[in-house]
Image: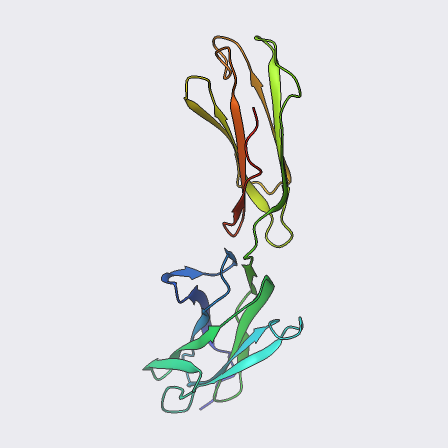
Length: 231
């Protein structure tokens, strides 16, 4: 058999034990680093897939091989820490058993080679961000004195997040009559969200009295924090 082409269609998917049907690839954020699995499928049109190797920076921040997923000339792999399904003579589907990962950013990719030694990585690395901690330094700033009816009020919520970054801030305004108005900055990485609201009969602050102001911030992994309310 003559084959000088690398395996085709190397496809990567990651998932976690608690959300087995929710696959992640590209850049993915999680607030739980327990039970992470990595799956790869590879196809070769001429000869069999021999080995797929998982490369990550899990161990010491260096991008290196962390697991070898053996294929075989005639059958699927038999790896104690992996499960492999041989779909036909040239396609293997391999899953690397669970990793438990601490907070941080991880890069991963898979290199597969056929039985003649032709090898290929997936076209691009994937990134997994594990962040189990809530945003910190959350502060809410409201006007220090009463706002004249008809004037504007500036409301500001600040926060930082060292791992995945804040990308969702909601300033909640509860009016004197109990109705609620939300101002939101979503899908834009930020550390400060400022909302200028007007007062007046047709404005956001449309009645006289005391308003309750709250803010909640979330990072890209879904962790949240709030500094409490002000009036």
